[in-house]
Each structure stands twice: as structure tokens, then as C-alpha cells.
Image 1 (cartoon, rainbow, N blue to C red):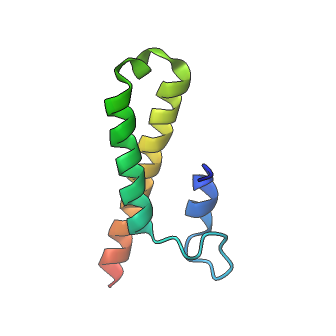
Image 2: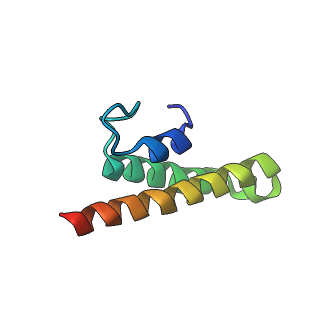
Length: 76
């Protein structure tokens, strides 16, 4: 899995999107599981800058995906 979330979020809904088949619900579920697993496996991650930065990135993408999913459900 490539950390290409900016492309996914920017291209979502475009007919020629690189990630056309990736459902936002599925992406959100997988990302939340990864987030939970990384928190459980590494209690001391908060002390390492790389791990903190990765957690912040995951949290930001989760928020954006939730907004995308919420927007989709409002249009249905």
C-alpha cells in the first residue's frame, strides 16, 4: 500500500482517477484499523518524531475520509 492519500483525496470522483475502484468506506475502515493497531503495538511511539508524524498523518487522512463519507451519505 502506497501512502498516496493526497492524490486519492484530490482525484476522488474524477472519471480518470488513479484510485477509481477504492471505496472511501473501505479506505476509512482499513486506515482506522491500521491506526488502532499502531497505537496498541507501540506505546512509546509518541517519543519518536517519525512515529508521531505518521500518527498525525493518519489522523488527518481519517478526518478527511470521514468528511468524504459523510458528504456521500448526504447526497444519497
